Amino acid sequence: MTSTSLLTDHYELTMLRAALHGGTAHRRVVFELFARSLPGDRRYGVVAGTGRFLDALVGFRFGPDEVDWLRRAAVVDETTLQWLSAYRFSGDVFGYPEGEIFFPGSPVLTVESTFGEAVLLETLALSIVNHDSAIATAASRMTWAAGDRPCVEMGSRRTHEDAAVAAARAAYVAGFASTSNLRAGERWGVPTTGTSAHAFVLVHDSERDAFTSQVRALGSGTTLLIDTYDVREAVRTAVEVAGTDLGAVRIDSGDLAGLAQQVRIELDDLGAKQTRIVVTGDLDEHAIAALAAAPVDGYGVGTSLVSGSGQPTSGFVYKLVARSGADVDSAPVPVAKSSPRKETLGGRKWATRRIDRIGTAQAEQVTVGGPAPDGRPLQLPLVKAGERVWTEPLSRARERHQRARAELPMEARHLSRGEPAVPTEFGDARAGSQEAP
Image (cartoon, rainbow, N blue to C red):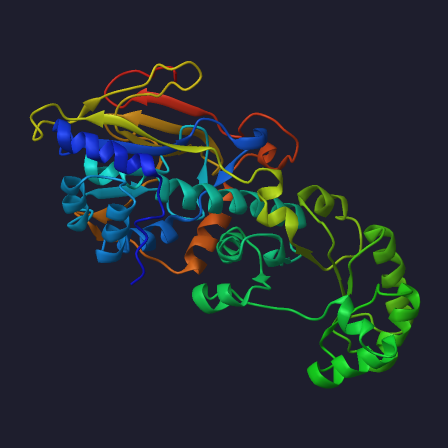
């Protein structure tokens, strides 16, 4: 097993070292991962990366190689190195499952353990969940704009090689039909697809030769790229080569809406009425929405998706909200920051979503003292006493997202900047509501 323990920041170990020397490392604490606001003033966010975080937690071990490097680099002292060499997370983790919707203040992850154990997980949790949720949120907006037309993730060449695999996974959770990334297929079971690029056409003596070669190898159900030279001529050549059973044509440049109209007319006139039209080329949710009236059958999305469509992080933070005192067996008491514009609400939170009688979400209820009694519970136990207790296939997360998104009010579909589609209500389950800081 490859260790994930060094996928963290130096200052986590600095705090651990000081806490061990100061006697606070063993205090019981509660950390929460949440977003103060939705990046880009979006209407909702989508949780992704929970499963990847839990996988990484299993490998969070400081073995001989990691300890030796920390010693050579003089990151911490010998007392801390001894503690790290025996590190095993023994606490509990609760959280929103993948595919669920989140809003400002939603406690997407709750970590209950000792300070020493829990503080080390900050960077690991944030780096995974921030990235994957940003991709899933962008993907959800795109698939909602696309309606019944499938979206294909094809952004591997526009991001880091490992981020590409995570992005394909997150996009699939949020409704993308497939990916071009083979590692995502091998590792996560995401369906893969791919046809050809302009280079394939250019390497042949003619476009006809390229189409003939592709159809002979892949059959008439393949997708032919038709905008290397003249689109109209390419459509005629494609049907002549593949016949009216040609699977699809792809347009990657130009006025996509106008070209799609022309290509649809040409295909129909040639008898290829079942041939689909797929468009690619710097698409985002806004471009997809603008193509709603065009005769397009599917979208390939790359750069915009893997960059979160302009919002590459979800804005999550990981904050300590409760701790025990000198007596580590005492129940943790609320603690909170009062820093300007970075205030936190103290106390361990529970989250429920209030749904009206017709199934529409009305409020995100975030309460201390227990869950609100009148909502759908949002958090699940993920880890108990250090042992992972939650796992599921991506297909289930994908289905959950469809259900959770269907609960949102209509304004959630708006692609313009605005307030969250569902307000967050903070309160105490044992008393009246209170304002969020």
